Length: 538
Image (cartoon, rainbow, N blue to C red; front, side, top):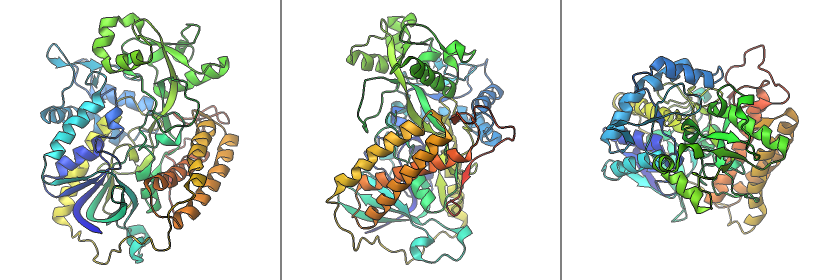
């Protein structure tokens, strides 16, 4: 079954939805999303959007904070682009109906780790959900946008499918094959332009703040089609997710305790009640995430503890309820009163700073293919993302990409080939022995958490690489003879993403930002730039 559209958007977070709304002004847009349209990393973003509004702030300060956090790997042009375009895009969100928190009629600005000023625009502690609500309302009332829920992208459609590769350096994207889970069939979606906005990779780890859909699908399908990837070794662990004594591997996401709590005065303490962050950084509990996560990891290992505490009792009960109502109720549901009790927290996989490389307009190395949001590597985040820069990056690059897509549709001949084949599942059978292969999902999570987490070593990385290679080999054999299911697609992508992260980590022979190796505890004397992975050379 085939479907034709002008622009195909894969994913329904802030990047995909905001892009679709702008692109729909000049063409028809089809959004495919793996679950319900509201399910995305955006929906769980508590903190907010970093932007320069306060009179005591400046673009220069925001840029400086971003560059310092990125540990030398940020692309200055990309950083300047998001910082200088932030304020007017916040105004656009307000026009779309986003209800940001206010103080005496003005936007209430929070502060988070790594920021030198209060500049976080937020909606209490449910910013992502509020933005998603407003964007979805506008998408669902737009006649030029079609949303297909419960559709999982399998692979992109390129010259590989046409068996007509004349120039390997000029591969074009003509859409994607997508698995319709409700009708158990594969849909061939043919498009003039395609945009990957599928979010992150958190589910390859045991503890993650990401929802179950975050299996790295977009990065994986992009890489298989020939996209270049960058900086896949830089996986950001959020320092403070709620510790709930989970023992067995689970797809259930860890509950995020927003960095905004530390911005409001919360302090990290060991289980005996002693503060410890000042030993690691003069900024204390307001140090950037990589420093805080490593410090917590070190304290837990040194003491043999399963968690540390976050203490915000000094803020007072009324202020806590007013500023963090969602977190307050969640903690209260498991017997923790934030106004009186310290919160047990542990680091959890949170954000992928690498991904498919793009230019300043979101273009990838494949013609007619764009990438936005967490699946992209724009150069904004470098070796470590500054808190609340991710939603800002998604908004700005979606805005830029929508404009150039409009120009492309107007000025270029983008008619896809007429001979694009339907999905061929001949020779495949149903997965009667699925249990034998599904165990690999738990194995991947264990391997990545134990060997490719906050602190790494060459020994751990090589051990992980050997095991992941074996799992990938088993999965590819199984995949080729088995009918498509969402679980199989996710598992295949998880194995590939794990392999790519490990391969990138082995290339970076230094400790920088989110990649900390016990073999290279200091920055290398010879500066190492972005780690680029090319499918044809790996």
